[in-house]
Amino acid sequence: MNETITLKVPDMNCGHCVRAIETAVRALDARAEVRCDLDAKTVQVATGLAGAAVLEAIREAGYTPST
Image 1 (cartoon, rainbow, N blue to C red):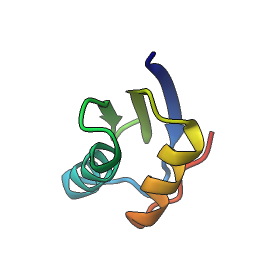
Image 2: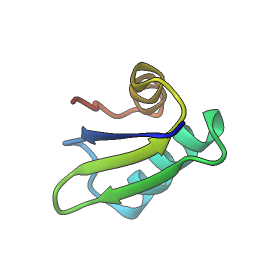
Image 3: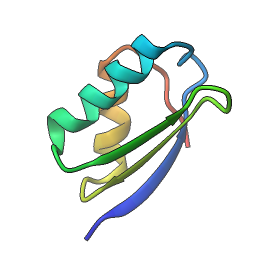
Image 4: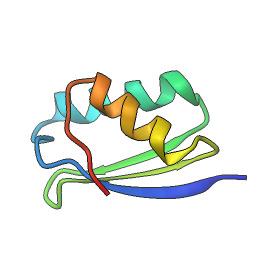
């Protein structure tokens, strides 16, 4: 069952950031739906992964997500 997780990512500020975050999350769950909003600096992820796994994937990509 997919859960939607909404995270704040204050250091996401360009298209490269969006692609890096999408790639990091989809490396763990290829079916994840990732929606990034640069203006609001938020990421919504619909996935079967635990929230902690999503947070860690984005951290490993070099960003500082928070709930």
